[in-house]
Image: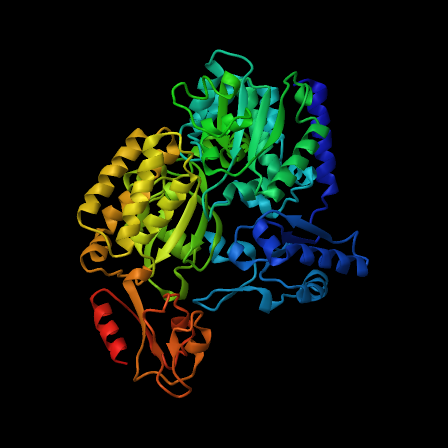
Length: 633
């Protein structure tokens, strides 16, 4: 970097820091997609109007930030610099927050988080149990940055690492630092990021390309989306540093079109980066040229596979291709190409700023740093969590996630999206890292984590996720196209009570064939839900086959609803709510369910008054007896 370029950056940074008055009140409103669904933009406009009404524009800031992670509690409002955490804020609360908290420094207790177990009221965001065991080195800045304002990123040392890299380091030194940090790709396979960079740099061919894979298609996963929405410049800075190290002059961010806010924010961030000299010709006067383009994907799940993604950018159908050659040697338009996902790129500036030794001190021997998980399912605290590698599942689910909803028992957690495995209760104390998950039959994947309770049927869970991968299969290779369909057929028969014991061996054999012979990662990992449920929950398969019973009372064909005559109070609630008029009976008389008409939707079970509890759910051997009794009615 030229001295003039470095001085210009330092001058700009000093100007930004001076403009950020220390201690000035700032009302931050979470602007992630989850809080958008809760109406956060109305809340933000209400604060802006309220501040203007009181002529406080020059004394109080209002900032719409990225996702804070605790999506269960949106809309989230945090009053800085005190860090006062208000959750589930409504428009009617705006005036009170301005008048009491901002002006009088008073706390509005009813808006604070209350610990469901201890009833303790918690004032500061950092003290909320959801955040206490997290280590938010990547995601933490989301709550302080307006993603549409580059100055907010600069104020938190944004682009500082880039300036130091271009000034003080050679490309090989950058690669060495990334390798030394132990950073592994956060998008799926967990391959060494530094090693991949090294291969791409050494590969013959020019030009070289880099790609940010933001085609996040796992059900329930939204980590990459929230990073792009909330802190897009961290991804851009990481890509520029990576391009400098690899020798690339052009990059692409491949983001699915279903992420409109992410597309909007990353597009604006790229424009701002160019305007301030972080992209384009001779970045910061260094002589290094690099530019990034946004490519909007159509949303096919297979596009997340790197060779399919490149085919899509090239204008072809998103089909995977045989490897080797790998993209690092022959990728986009046949040229060396490095692909990492959003979270991997966002780690790069942190590593270069704080050093590889600092970064590698976090995590386990083989899995360094932190990982962002999308914590969803049957859990009290849903949201995004960033935790150090090596943390246990128990800590994530109970300490951070607040345990299972409605006091029910934990049964399993699936990690790694639809191609991940289901981990049972007796492995709750296992550390979460790449290698431990692989031994358990699962994968880290991009970071999806779906929690299940006692009411989840693991046979049906396997069928559900395999149905997803089967529908998303591109169909190019026979093992994936036909193998997944065959497995879905077998699993469907089992959930209907039509399975045979031979089906279990058949599932295992097809799973091995699909895993070994499929062309890409989608097919190779598709059997994981089947293999892990067979491994840890085989008794449920046997119950479905031998007893024609679903122990979890989830599979419709294997259950029936029955009104206990001695408990029925004739309240008519079940009859009025039945969508197919399968229930007969008059007020204050015993009601009866016509088992042939019943579609087993469970509405009668849900609406039956708690004091009565007349509607019961039966399965397996009990079912025949119930049907006989129902016929006598």
